[in-house]
Amino acid sequence: MNPKDVYLIQTDTTVGFLSQSPGALSRAKKRPPEKSYIKAVASLSKLPRIPREHKNFVRRAKHTTFVCPDGESYRVVRGRHADFVRRFGWIYTTSANESGRDYDPGYAKARCDVLVETSEGLAQKGASHLIKLYKKGYVRLR
Image (cartoon, rainbow, N blue to C red; front, side):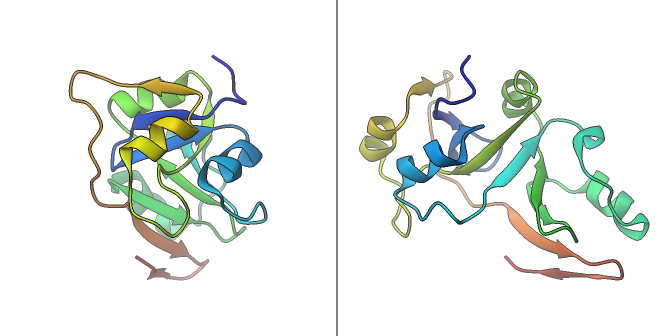
């Protein structure tokens, strides 16, 4: 498995493009390269230092992306998606659509290098919750 490839996969939330190359993801989405991506990890141990008061909250959260005080965003994934992520250690993830547009299966399949499909197929679902963590408190962004 090549970390520079763009994978099209059913994530734990919606259909996503995954890659360890932010440049490849930017090209697939036709998105400005300076925008950052969510880093998906399959284990809490792969997260950076989380403020103490948020540790239980992060550990129990499902389908939630956290923007940490360092400005980076992370999501701990579970299920089949986690099995895929574990092969890389971590991987950038984003929705499988052209930037600013709705999901189009034809577009997504044409822009990926590798299609990873299970018997359930690919289905657009809701995005993850987005929470910005501060040293004291948090704000729900989405």
